[in-house]
Image (tube, rainbow, N blue to C red; front, side):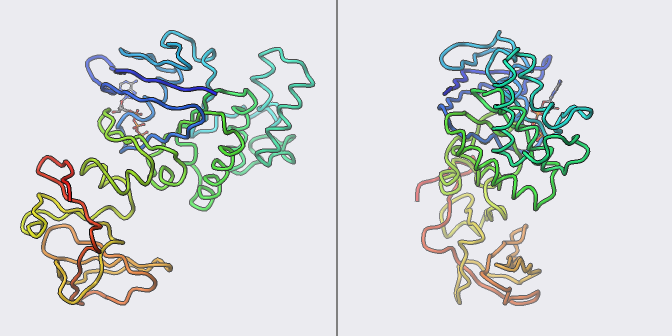
Length: 334
Ligand SMILES: Nc1ncnc2c1ncn2[C@@H]1O[C@H](COP(=O)(O)OP(=O)(O)OP(=O)(O)O)[C@@H](O)[C@H]1O
């Protein structure tokens, strides 16, 4: 059981500020996801937590103890990287046992720990293989196994799935979800730029932009109550539609945001335009409508698209399922 407290954390490289006044409390056993666009500082924040990077100012406390000057290996943290970083000449078993061997742990306990972890990760039948004889997903599981055997208090993942193909990503997402259930006391921090991973795995999401925390909340809080235009546009796929100028007049807002799934095609809708493109995804479809406001508005339809390029369409937000933002991108009350 381990909680983390980050207070007024700054990270600078020379004169460049990468992380700016980060404040965050992470409870024991929580699964936290850091998301944000490329270069926003997610990995840097994770590396500061791990100790691989030093903190320029501010503090990081684990279980109430400030660990700024504690070596990475003494923080009770294990990290899993995007590149699996396995030892190529060692078997799966030896890869997983390596850190324990360095700890002079007795042979029977070492064997038990490795086998337990292998069982959890469905790797038992591969224990004698070399990494090169494994699939990408299996290698990633070994990398996770290597971290599990050390009984870390905090588990850090840096984009662990980004080298895997789409199907495997979905499977590994589920497996990491199961791992979280199996290790309810282990605090997990996971970095991704994939907001689907963030939405599906996190207890709470931390959204970063330019080294500044934008919002922290449960996936549904961020989805339903984004505190800025940036978070509204970042969370959710496809991206939230934003309408400004005369298109937002009916709502007395600078910008109106509506998700594609909250737009209903109706005879006399608030907005109307010409369909420029429709995409069939099987379970639903996305209709791209040019209403003359710049970017096309995306309307989701359940099932197969029944509107096609050239059709005229008018639509409105469903009930109060829209967001109003003022000129500075801050949300306005309904
Ligand atoms: N050693 C370094 N020296 C100088 N700048 C660095 C260093 N490491 C990272 N940066 C810069 O810090 C910023 C944040 O990098 P970081 O890797 O944390 O971003 P990220 O959010 O994880 O991005 P991505 O999703 O692309 O991995 C980037 O602008 C990067 O160029």
